[in-house]
Amino acid sequence: MAIKCFEDIVAWQKAQDFSVFIYKSFGNLKDWDFRSQICRASVSISNNIAEGFDRGTKPEFKRFLYISLASTSEVKSMLYLAKRLNYVDEITFITLLSQAQEISKITNGLIKSIA
Image (cartoon, rainbow, N blue to C red; front, side, top):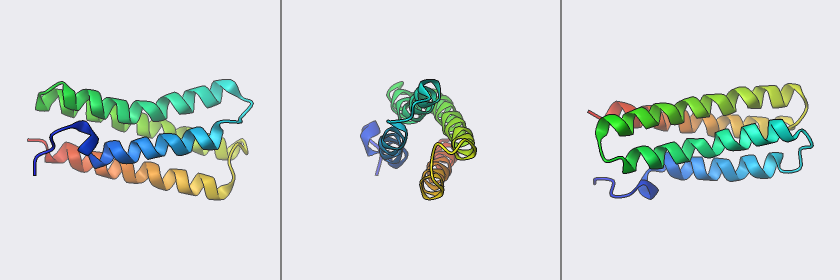
């Protein structure tokens, strides 16, 4: 079955859920710069999937999937820092990191599936 709209893409769906969890996890953080950066990076994951898909060509979609993957890595890096700074507890860290790793795997699979 061919994907007809970006909302059907599992990576986009999971990235949207991930952003909601990021916003809830860091919403009360007093370090505004950190909070803003991790939230913006998390939103970039799903936005780049959507934008790339709607560009309408495989090369453009693939390029934007790589950008999405890079944003996922940025969030993962920030999660490690958040843990070291005690901005998140261990359970939240593990949960968010696991979600980010899953999004990365799905996105990599999608990239490989594009001829």
